[in-house]
Length: 163
Image (cartoon, rainbow, N blue to C red):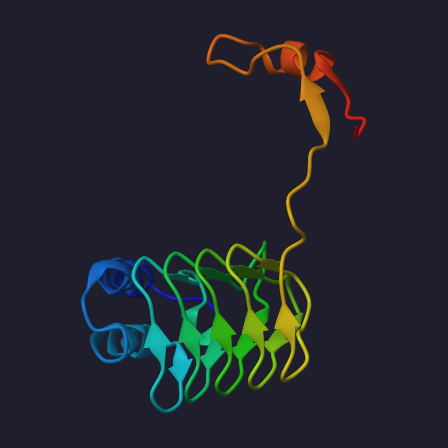
């Protein structure tokens, strides 16, 4: 859908306001509705949540959903996709939900996504999704400072062998 420059700019102004405005269950959802995000019922949108700037109409958030601080809902990558957050779904802090053109990702009703989890495919209802526990991947022999060329840093990595 082609939008005027004025409408696209206005959507970004509203999105910026919504990211820092008070009222996670009142003002923020209201501002996102003005942008075109489809919100049904009462939802909670945490502070600094990024909800699709280019195609806000491709985001659907249902009654009772909670989207916590600094999460990102991105419904486009060189074309629009769709994201549906189901009724009473919970997205923890720093979650990333992203889709590609022509695809719909649905976070099922009552699903719980733990903090810092990246979602690129649909999540069934009443399902807990958690990121894998971080684990060592390599031994760093060349510190990654501002002066270190990335190639040197990579060349300095050694296989990690658990003790």
